Image (cartoon, rainbow, N blue to C red; front, side, top):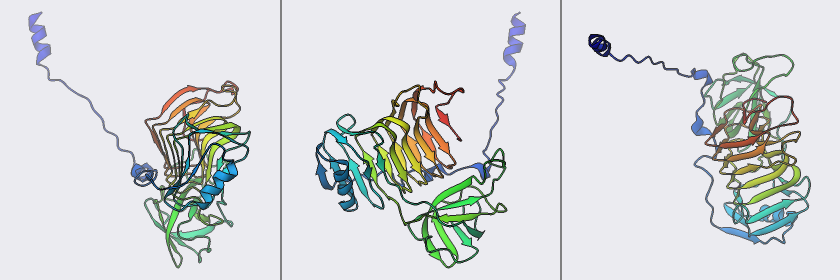
Length: 343
């Protein structure tokens, strides 16, 4: 018996290991996600409002705010009968005194909104540059004036079965959104770079109608009670914007809904407690919708929602260190997940 033990111990320890490298055509540079360098820490206060302010007065203060300054909402409960809208603003922070301290309480259907147009024309044909990692594409003809510096634009190609399970019944859904940095003749230069090679799949581009949306704007340190409205923060065409350290609650569709958005950051928010949870008909914490790309969500708490993080027709988004609890749709026949990778 002792000899047997000695023989067994004399065998060297064998470790079987395997490594796997993601194919380069499927990899993403996650350092390009979110606001480059993080949300801007602004200290100059342009205007301070108290809880007697209306939605229109808050929107007016945002519209009048100088770039790189703050509209401050003092502690208190703001009872708002309309939306807080802003469009085509650059460098404005809307900041409260903290979750549960500054409370925006909307009437039904109220929300924070930044809608702009997002596409134009039938799509301009691209003749070169549509490869992974490219930051310049060449148009087949002179691009429309809508393809202008500092605006967002969309690149789209026919379904590529490397990424799309089926090509029937849905249409062209390999898409990405980028910010234009230069235009020279038929060449348009942009950032972040193309995610997937589109050569051979009829690539086209669409411009954003009406020029830039909101750029480098942020919402910080407040509670947003949507009042059973659809969305808490609906940002269409937002570029390098952020929602940070907020509580967003009592919505019926989405807490935060980026739409044709690029390099936004959603950090350290408490999102959830849907209206009529868990019997709601919809209900998503963050809903990356309509080609929202290179966004970053981190350190958020999703509670009492149908899906915590939902992606629809959007690529290159990064999420980590989020917490998901009480994820449920009792009105749906099929089980839902905390993270839905493709809706």
